[in-house]
Amino acid sequence: MTHSDVGLEPVKRALEKSELEAILASGIFDRAPNLEHLLTYVCSKYFAGATNEIKEYSIAVDALGRPPDFDQKRDSIVRVEAHRLRKRLRDYYEAEGASHSIRIEIPPGQYAPRFVAQQVAPPAPADAAAAAELSDAALPEPMPEVVEAAPPVVLARRLGRHRSLFIGIALAILLSTSAAAIYYAGPGVSARQPGAPVRVAGVTASGKDQVLLLAGLESGQYADRSGRVWESDRYFQGGSVFDSGDRPILGTREPRLFQTRREGDFSYDIPLAPGVYELRLYFAETLYGENNAAGGGETTRMFDIFINGVRAVHSLDVIGEVGATAADIRAFKDIVPAADGKLHLRFEKDTNPAFVNAIEITPGNFGKLRPVRIVSRDHAYTDSQGRTWQPDRYVQGGQLVVRTQPVATAGDAELFHGERFGNLRYVIPVPPGRYGVTLYFSEAWFGPGTPAGGGVGSRTFDILTNGLLLRRAYDIFKEAGGNHRAVSFTSHGLEPDAQGKLEISLHPVRNYACVNAIELVDESSSDAPQS
Image (cartoon, rainbow, N blue to C red):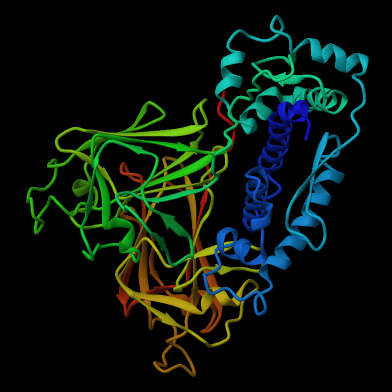
């Protein structure tokens, strides 16, 4: 690689990342999250210069949620999804992406991506006029600051019809010269002297597209029920480490996520790749509260949380929200790294030192929380549409049981082979907004040919969200027209409570309630935020 090639490499990489962000923002993966996870994963390895790490096993475990004992000889999920991704990319570039100056390809028989430059025609007169509109004089004064702080996906949306022109001009310069470096500092492209620093807003060489941290864990890792690996504590400044050992934590099937913590006045500066993210912060109060060492209760420990310098939560009181020694999770959407390529989190004391147990940062979509899908099983499940259903979580009460009988359904029968029964309460953390919830059922215990016999009226229960009755005396057998038949119940326009929780309760009326799967979909507007 020549000296000038080194200077141009960051610009080439920025254009490639912009193309990836454009695809992710296009909506072609809205109903295919597995394909989005696969593309994001292989591209992140490419950008990190680690294409040698793109293996079938690593894709299955790290991108598609398969457990660590994944056996590629028995499970063809990666090959199937890669084939689907190649077709989805071809369809995209034959339609919406036909005019793009860069195309992403996954060659057959490989998983590492290729970014292929297309021929760039010189600007036509009309395009030249549009190019003139990108000058400092033509754009509003705040535009340089917007570009400086915005990740590529925001920039692509805000440049609108100028986006492909900008990329085309930059790519044309990049391909036609080896003697200049490109410096993008707002609305325009200018050449610099060879060897001069190259800077592209929002690009961070060390940034990650997913971060799972166990605060206070000084070494080692932890693999949760979904097969995701949580790393030891890092990127922090200040605070002290505490470990509550094997202390039981109410309201979670992953107590390990809540048993270590960072406490005090402290902050995190987490490097992230450009993009949009969801953030979840995990808390469990094991010091204060009834039956805990320091005693106290509501208001004993309250603290503030800041995200990129903006106070996101005022006077968080974990005991006030969920009680002592219980799992509490706060969820946030539309999270983007700051101009320096980092997400800045700060925790400040109010009545007693702040704390956090775990930090989860995952790729997101503008304006909408990614769907939350839960199946009543111990392990994640990928359905025939490539959607991943997380193992049973956010639940209080009841027991899991495996159902092996065939289920008559137009969808995935596997969704109904796990069941949770009892007096059930799911508390799902979500940001403010409106949500649709679908509950999936199949009656396997009551009805002809079952151990308990009976039929209509044998099992009934009330369905509530945040205390609001949605359906009284719901009868699975009656609604489905028999046992071993799939049925679902959907409610729209549901809002979380003031603590950011959407609580789904199934209260027994006659015999225990039960559920096979839950799907929560954000019904808020997906418009990108305005500058």
